[in-house]
Amino acid sequence: MPSPTKSNQADSIHCFSKNLIHLSSVPRSETTAGWITLTTDFGLEDWFVGTMKGVIARIAPKVRVVDLNHGIAPGDVRAGAFSLAAGFRFFPKGAIHIAIVDPGVGSARRALVARTASCLFIGPDNGVLSRVLSQESPIEVRCLENPKWRLNKVSKTFHGRDVFAPAAAHLAAGAPVSDAGPKVDCWAQLDIPTPRSRSHQVQGAVVYVDRYGNAITNIPNEGFLDPERPADVWVGEKRVTKVHEFYQSVAPGKAVCVPGSSGFLEIAVNSGDAAKRLKLKVGSEISVRW
Image (cartoon, rainbow, N blue to C red; front, top):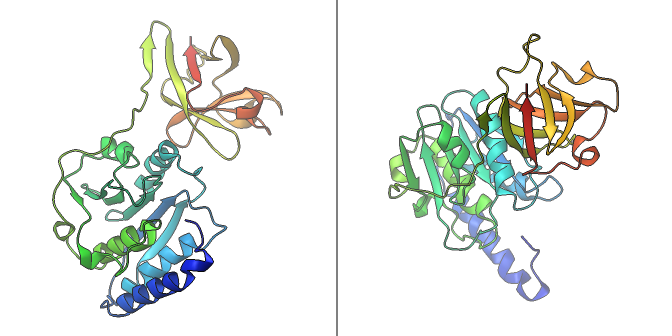
C-alpha cells in the first residue's frame, strides 16, 4: 500500500473524502454487540489497522474489535491461515473473524464470507481461510459482492479498509449473510502437510515459527508424555531432545520439545531461539521416535 505520489495526491484526497461521505450516510446500529477479530500482515507501524477499526466503528460502534495477529510476515498466507486457526476457537459463538494476508489485492481473486455453526470468517480467496474451513464445516460460503457493503470508492491496494472491514461491520450490525452475494461451492486450498505415522515414529514438519523462534510442527500433542514410553525428537537425522512438559524442563540454552498451546508439538530452546539455533524453518522435517 504505497503512499500517493505528488501527481496523484489530489485524486487520493478526493477518494478519501468520497469514502468518508459514504460512511457518514450509513445508518448506525446503536444496539450492535459482538466480536470482530483481525488477523493481518499489516503490522502496527502504519495506519492500516487503525483505519479498518475506524470503518467498523462508523458502521457498528458497539462491536468489540480484537487484534488477533498483525505480525504475520508480508504475504505469508500459510502463517496467516495457521494463526487464524490457532486463535479463532477461543472467542464467543457468533464472532466474525477477518483474515487479510492478501498478495493478490486488486486482482480478480474473490472476497469471501463463510458461515459455520460457530462463527463467520471473512477474507480473500487465496487459501488464508482454508485451515479453519477444514476444521469448521461451512454451512455456506458466499462472495462479498454487495456494493452497499463496500466503501464508495474501492482502492486497488487496501481491500481491508474498503471491502472486508465494512462487510464485517454490516454483518455484525445484523445484516444476513445471504445478502453478501452469490454462493460458491469451492475455494482456494493450501497444500497443508499432514503427519505420517510409521512403526515407532511419527513424521511431520514445521508449519509456523513464532516470535520467540519456537518451531511449531503439524504433529498433534497427544500421546508423547508417557513416562513408560519416552519419545525422542529428531530434526532430519539429528536427535535434538525428548518431549518434555514445559520449557524449563531442560537447562537454559538447551533444546526442548513441548506440547504447544496451539495443539501441536513445538521445538524450542530454553531462553533461546530454536529456529536460529537448530536452523529450523517452515517445511523442516521433524520426527518423533519411540
